Every structure is written in C-alpha cells, then in structure tokens.
Image (cartoon, rainbow, N blue to C red):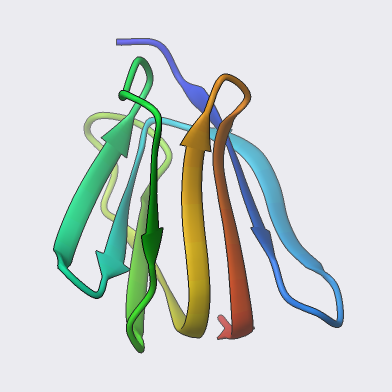
Length: 86
C-alpha cells in the first residue's frame, strides 16, 4: 500500500511532516490505525503515544502526545496536539 502524508503540530512548532506507511492514533474512543486511503474522520486525542510506521516492516516509533485532535482528509493525517515529545 502507498504511503501518505503525516503532520504533527503543537502550538509551539511543527514536530513532524513526512510520508509514512501507517500511524496509530490514541483517540478518546480507542486507537485508530491510519493508512493511505483511510476514510475522512476526526477524533479527539487522549494522552498517549502515536505509533509511526515508516514502512510495512518497520518497528514503530513512539511519540508521546497530550490533548488535541487528529483529522484524516484528502491531504493525509494531521495531528494537532497540545504537546508532543519524542
């Protein structure tokens, strides 16, 4: 499956902007695995970890996030978090 664009932004800075294989988002209603072709959606985030997979066989990279929301649209996945650490 093709890669898609992922952006992680906080009020202070843009943390990430890259093409990835999959991102697992810690939503308040459960975790969601987002890949290319995912239906448009929006969810609020709970404090937790984004898991970023750069390829199908890669080990995930975890990024701690707190608060905010995630939106999947035509341009990929945008995560607007209150804070994010690596």
